[in-house]
Length: 271
Image (cartoon, rainbow, N blue to C red; front, side, top):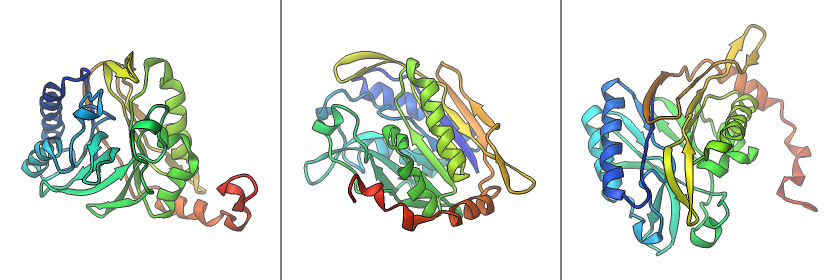
């Protein structure tokens, strides 16, 4: 699958300008024949819940026009969703070639002030895209190995991780992404933004360096983690071809060697 990573420079509160910029870069990725285009967390630049949007809404409808024009899929990063029940979520919509939203992941592991602002997603699901199964984790979700493992057990062939990572946090973020890729024998795409932003009222600088991690299968069912493509610290569109079939057998073997009856403590101490 050809995956387009849109590493966007967005500005706080400039929702309209950020949307227009994202559309131009998504078109650039689509023109390079990307079948799946991915944005980062809060690329719209919302800084208050008043800037949340419904799904479908303006952002997904505009991205839907790109998806329909180029017959591709778009993982719309993560936006602040204003749901019909009045609760706001950090949500990642998947838009199909019809221009319609065909799936959505709501962030499960809420980070810091998000716990007081947002609702929590209810689980982890895979979504079928052109014969493959795609799972989504939003930023802090990837810090918890159970999240990616659930997606792998549900048959995911690729995990996409829209994130919002400071320059100082890039090494640790890459480590989490690589660990999830290696332990599950699965390609992982992490998407970050660049430039200034706002996090809980404080100015921040996003570090870019989005990455596509493609574990490599060697003879003897040995998997090596020495193959990836990494973006710069500037705004750019990165297009990479990922073989989604190479690791299916190795992944199935690794998952079959689990001993789940001995993992009953994962629900918490005393469980």
